[in-house]
Image 1 (cartoon, rainbow, N blue to C red):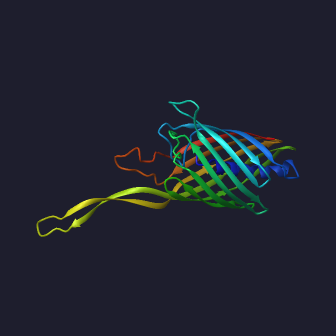
Image 2 (image 1 turned 90 degrees about the vertical axis):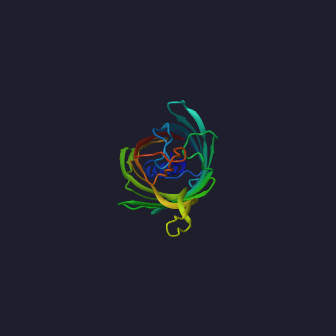
Length: 278
């Protein structure tokens, strides 16, 4: 699970798209939304834990206005060793503004993971970011950036294209398909070791070298992802399925240290959601 925030942002965007078919006015009073979510393969840009856990997370959202919100979700993992084990809670606060052509988003996320959490992203202490989407009839274009705080500070970037198709099922319900392609980039911190010659050789006598280990930070492509969110909205009920295929890139591998190496491979997974707005 890369983050609850992009998932919530996508839901928000799609709900706003459907609201035109269901209501002529945007609610201004505080609104509570509750959803149940299931992820078939928890991952962090395609990186997974050794147990390949699935995840269940109920999400509560409180919208103070149509633009300002807070949300929180306890995360429960499921694998061959533990059934519905509590891994921690992720809370977010944000602002989103939807115009005729542009959608802008700002957010701050604070995870509260258990110390022994098996989640790949459990080292994350906080994250903030922003994204901007340009809407048109052909392809919606999204670009965003984020800052992740752990023992070090990492910077991320996201670029995506999607084409939204909306089908009016009945007078009060709608079905939406949103084929999406996304590129994730970010800094990676790791150690690099090499041998450095410290004493040159003389005639037949070889010189001497010593091993040098240094910390390196590089900005790389982290993953490519293809997804097709499918959403059904009727009244206050929203059902959503998001099948996704992610291809992780530039996995860090530390020779002789599998505990410090990243696990991951091309992965198909899906997120299922049932949501109710009060």
